[in-house]
Each structure stands twice: as structure tokens, then as C-alpha cells.
Image 1 (cartoon, rainbow, N blue to C red):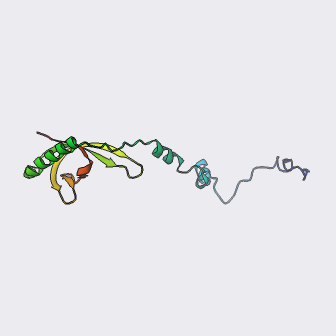
Image 2: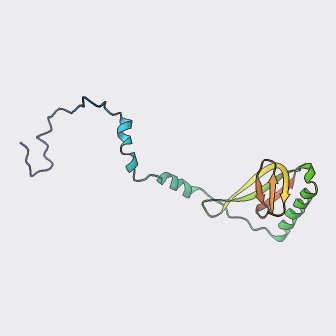
Amino acid sequence: MANKNNIHDYSDIIDQPHHVSKVHQPMTMYERAAQFAPFAALTGHKDAIKETERLTTNKKILDENQIEIINRKLQLIVNNIHLQPTVKIVYFQKDLRKTGGKYIEKIEKVKKIDEYTKKVVLIDGTKINIDDIYIIEIMK
């Protein structure tokens, strides 16, 4: 008989046959593991690490000369908007989760320049804040 004072003494059950239910089917390893999934201590940890590793860029500050060049090109586009000129545009897109953002380069036809909202609207529906434009080139 097992010693009741020693909690590590399993001599009373060590030789007993393993219980097999006559009612329930045995669980697969996947089903057994799934029971413990909600208790995973690091749920979301990998996503948090990836988000931290994701790099952003600070928005570059344009000087007066660069702003003037962009404004001239925008005026040229406004004057020829009926032709729906194709532009190559590099603009800053603010990151929604972190400080900074990234620069995007796009080649597309201009649908309109909305002077009220200060946005360039491209044929594909993209709306770009004029203040976020870094480079704009009119394609031939």
C-alpha cells in the first residue's frame, strides 16, 4: 500500500491499466492540443514583434525651391487636366500605427486636382495630399 505521507509515491496506481472510454472516441493529438490553445501565454507576441521590427521613415521637409517646382508642375497639370496627363508621383503616406510612414511611387493618370481639399485625385481613385508630394513628374 502507498505511503500517504509521500505525495510522490504512486505505487498504488502505477500498475493499473490505462482507462479507455467505451462512450467517447479517443482524441487526436490536434484536438488534445486545441484544449490548451486559449491558455497560450504569448498569444499575439509574434505579431507585436513583427510590428516593432517594421520600419518607418520620417517625412522629409521640402525647401522653398522644391515646393515651387511642385507647385509649377501642379499648375501645368491643372491647365492640361482635360488631357488627363500621366504623372510619376512620389508621396509620403503616414503610417496608421507608428510614427512616420513610407514613400510611395506611383505612375497614373490624373483625374483632377481638388484645390479645396488640396488633393491630387488619380484615375484609379487614389487621393494624395498635395502637402505629402515629394516629387511629381509629368510623363510624355
